[in-house]
Length: 474
Image 1 (cartoon, one colour):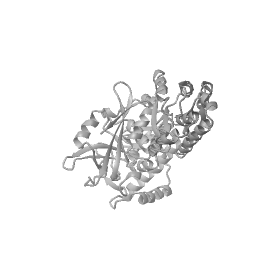
Image 2 (cartoon, one colour):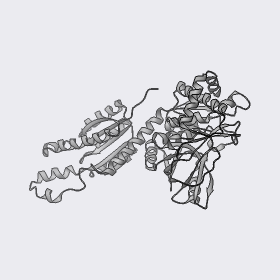
Image 3 (tube, rainbow, N blue to C red):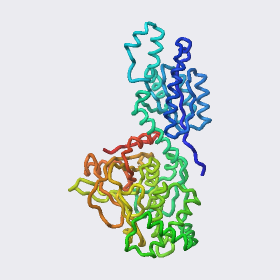
Image 4 (cartoon, rainbow, N blue to C red):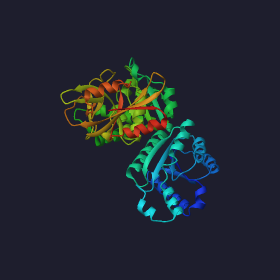
């Protein structure tokens, strides 16, 4: 699949009538626009800078230019007072989200020095260089009356807060861009009776974009048959490098998992899959052998940025991909018990873990049964790295919409269950009891994605760019 690079549009606005009246003002404002461009480029984005737009004619041309350039997000830098007619044609034609940069060149006007100029024209020019806040209400009014969503960053040109916000908007746009081009593999079928995880695939495509590739488990089983002995031995050695393989793991089980892992990699490459949701019983046949040996290979996929969700949980595969592209990891989890003594919630799940966000090396343990599922084999045991974490759920609502629900917590030290599953202890600011009740009231399925760091502000921006609702449980 061709990689579609994120493109960020930038334009500043001014009023052409000022340039003949105030010598040097236009050049000064253009210089500020170049400062913004340099800042945007530090994020690694491809920036399409159209400079200073100061007439409605230039605005119309700019709208066509942005549309032809296929920009994903536009930053509108308000340098001084400008007419809303220099803005609306740009954004209306481009049809992408817009962030208004209401940025002063300095924290405050130097009133004393300005008043010493003793030249009303020069004094007005200096004032106009600080006049970025003036037209923003006009622009906002016109956007609202035109039905155009917009976002704002208000501050100073060299303020750290401003560029942190800008960086988060770019990160959110990058995640939206990835989701729009992601190929989500769907292999197998739903776990029977787990009604909360059933998903509207068309709705998922409509909101996030991308493509869903339906894959037969038989295809993975067929690929397993062609894996060579050398490939199996090499993958077993790799398992021992990456994982903490316990002594009671039988050589035959490691080889079985290695065969499936190699075949899984081939399947992913063949279909150019960027994330995967899977589940299949395969009772008493080769497919059972395949699916009961998939956990280690799926864990390796997670570490490579290809989130793999069990139980055919499509919504959670989407959440895991979002978390992964924000650089947070995104491991498959659910809360399964409460510890009222320590006021923590225990979260974990059977199946794959995310190596990149584990606390220490992931253990591999043999299980005689996969609880609630067919088969037996090797599983992984891990805790999420201690420190700040964020939970994310993709929710399908009763009115046919999608929303994001997230919560920030701390992964804390303490006893965990050594049962061959992922499991961690999480402490929430509002307490375990309040968190659980608040989270449940949002309509989340029982699975969610967990990643490292507190990134709810980035998730909120992603929701804004996608035009969907978001709830931050706190």
